Length: 83
Image (cartoon, rainbow, N blue to C red):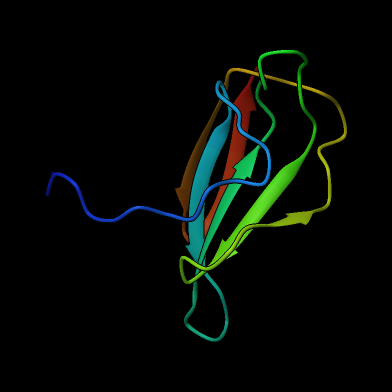
């Protein structure tokens, strides 16, 4: 709605067809999450997290490799579906 807002740091692993969402943690920090997708060679199960638009770090993997996910944040909880 507001157009361009900001660039985030480059992901550890480039991907498309992934889910991306965010929530606010208990300290008030904005947490961005990317999950799954395709890196041009294989389907991914990896997930990355960025806190307050800082550098990305790997977090727990998805239970399976999956691409073309969709997600929604409802009541500060992330729901991922599709694939």
